[in-house]
Image 1: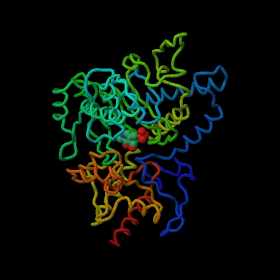
Image 2: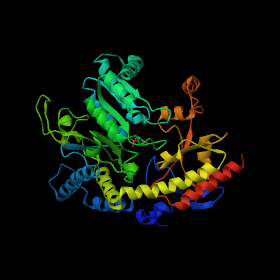
Image 3: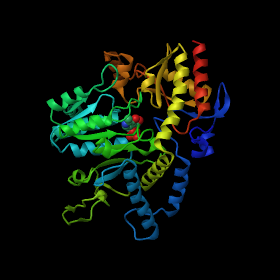
Image 4: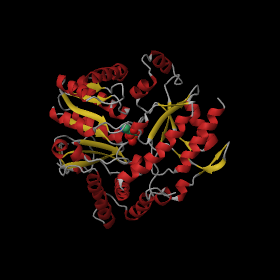
Amino acid sequence: MTINNISPNKLFSSSILKYPVDTSILGKVNYVNLDNAATTPPLKVVEKGLSKYMINYGSVHRGAGQKSKISTDMYEDSRRIIKSFVNAPTDSYVLFTGNTTGAINTASYFFSFLKGKIAVSSIEHSSSWLPWIKAEGIKALGGQQNTFNEMDSVNEQIQFLGRRQVLQYDVNENFEFDLTTIENLLKKNHIKVLVLTASSNITGYCPDIKKIGMLAHKYGVYFLVDACQFLQHHKIDMKEMGIDFLVASGHKFYAPYGGGFLIGPKNFLDSFLPYQIGGGNLPYITKTGEFLRYRNQLAHDPGTPNAIGAVTMALALEQIKKIGVEKINQYETGLTNKLYDALKKNPNVEIFVEKNKLGTVIPFRIKNMDSNEVAERLNSEYGIGVRAGSFCAYHVIRKLLGIKNDSNIIEAVKHGNTKTIPALIRASISLCNNETDIERLIKAINKITTRI
Ligand SMILES: Cc1ncc(COP(=O)(O)O)c(C=O)c1O
């Protein structure tokens, strides 16, 4: 099937799309991946480009041989391609990390040296929230000497002190950000960085990045955007949107080879010692262990880098650019709308997003059924992969489900019972899906609900 000239068959290898699975109801079928917000399969061009890169593979930034030179050039080229894809300011660095989590941990380390608090939105993934608490907590704790036995209380203290430094701004009753709420927070507190996810990993809600960025800058606050659920579906432009720091993960945009990145301003990043240090990211070490520093991107490239991660991210972004992100968005939202309309007709399905705010994810549950169990059945009976759970965004899930008091959940989890943790089912769509995938899920849900 081709819509808008987009056809998954052309973009992904057939061994990925025609992955056979045995199911108890449909027999042997091709696996349907509707868990793309968790991770995505590699594009065909990425697989091919990777094979080519492997032929040339040699040590990056360390060797004089031909393979080292080619590998280093391709690695460095990846930074340029990524930078251009997101229209990063010329004087910004692209630092490679393992994923978005690694990128935010890196950023939180740098910011922990600066005075002020962090403002994090209430719809963040925990990866965009907890690293700030930890880094700020460690800083606030100072350099105490402790024995190993004291670490439990030290860990608690780190969390306690860190939480005081990391403030949250919430969405309103329509699940949107009010600029006045954010402005009040910025007015009343000395905030050093405002953190915002460009797209909720549960509802797909995309806040007005540009307006919020302008507000941050009005108060002299850095603006960090988590684009890992966004840049594969929507146009991102750091300059236009006023984004100072941008993070994302390759595995969410068809390059699942352990690459991620943090983009940020050169003058900011040059000021700090690197997050990780060892070999490769410094030019010289004296007899006494004093190390001389680079003031460039290399300073933030500790050890032998994950060149495959970097090169594959660049290959994927080039392909996305070639197809056109607007076209991709139309294709994906066409499929999401079809799924939404069908699920909406089923009286046993509760959907947790409004149609006018629909992105490429649909959070839902089936009345009187355990969401984890439904997800298991979709896999074992119908060969469909979705995810069930809280999706590391507990504020969002509590809000969606109207959970005001979670003391029972906390108590149960402390006693090892995780069954009470709130869960929804999330179907998430990408370029690898087609109408047949959507039809399979609709039929499966209708079948499962006829037996309630
Ligand atoms: C919005 C958001 N931020 C951060 C992350 C963490 O990404 P990673 O697991 O690649 O570090 C995720 C992962 O699902 C996410 O959805």
